[in-house]
Length: 141
Length: 440
Ligand SMILES: [Zn+2]
Image 1 (cartoon, chains in turn cyan, brown):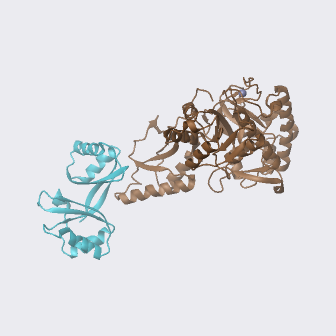
Image 2: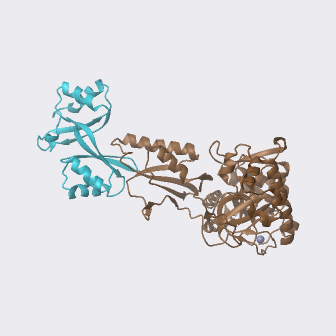
Image 3: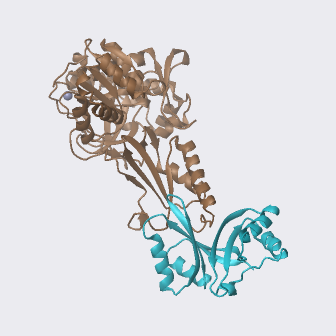
């Protein structure tokens, strides 16, 4: 059920994100979600896009360092504690969270939280057996 | 300004007298090395030359070269040429453990060294009436001990401050009315800045400064002279050869006199090893001819400069070396520590990094800053920021242990480093220490 997230190395310098966005635009790649995290020197852009493999090829052609990373995406219930319940399940199972970000799914109109953990397989089991709705690639295509 | 000669009979000796002295001392040194240091015996045998083939300076070219690596491999005492009981002191080059070069001194070696430094001080105008403040480090480093010995020999009042503690340095400069200061040019520039900022220029009594142990630009010299109100003099030396005082600048300020009664200088083509005529730009090679414990035969310094044997306006006859124009290897001197790009490359490769990197040396507030840009590769990449930061930290820590100094490491995007003809330019030295023109 994992989604293929595009992770891209970018320098923490002016207009680096602009260049990345331009590359994706020229290859007709459509972004669904974007999260940035950075240090003083560099950052990592994490993107969910409609065609991850094609986007990866395009970026490699333009000398970007990028990779596809499996991430879990869960649909959040629109109520207080929606994210809390999921984090609690992971914590109880001793699964470490590397990073997380959220976006609104256009098709469903609900919030989606992207979660990167140290043990992808177990996280899917834990969340699945607790009945947490996992988001598929089709859901965001 | 012209200043005195400490040993006028030697410093202004005729070329013939000097050559006769050099011939005699060279023959003795070669014999001493051959008989007492297995390394020299082996190297000379390999080259098919024996002490019997060396009669004068003209025969120097027959002898094998000696490299810093040879000295490192001899650590700790493989090059020692006298019984240990005759040694009275050691000093050492900076460098990581086991990679140091140990210099041994007999009492006669120390006397010779003191004499060299006394001559340098006298040339810079120091007399027994002067107060010499030494802000070079003391300890294994030769800067402090060398100038200290020279100043004693000359009879000046000596303040062995050692390096650091700028407030105390300034207090002593003022309260002891120091007239001569000896330190690295970068520390002098820093002191000059602090003194200016605090408006203490009028409280200083300095007339001369003796600066060495690193390359410095003409611009830096003028800045130091103006702000500290002194006349600046270059001093040159290598720990391997005894320390500061191998060559020193006189009041004519056009090159540094190499003390030819103790050292023979040659300029060679760094690629072929061929000896070049006076005036040619090439690598400086030294032979010590008045040392007992750690004599050196044809030691390659990798410093690029020229030699000038014309008689100097100061009256000294000893050959003058021009300003160091660069290095024949790719060694950088950063914060007084020798840094080879190959060491940095080895660390990067051992950490799974790409071999596309760039070393940038700059000077901020008169202190060297070492930055290393490393191009990101797919193999190094992770989508976790924590992993990339940990990789940076690991490289920094490894570099620190290998080089002995701190380097900032930056992960950069691929193909962002400057390239010349497709190859990444590895070293960018922005300090402007070497210049092709200007007085030495
Ligand atoms: Zn002179």
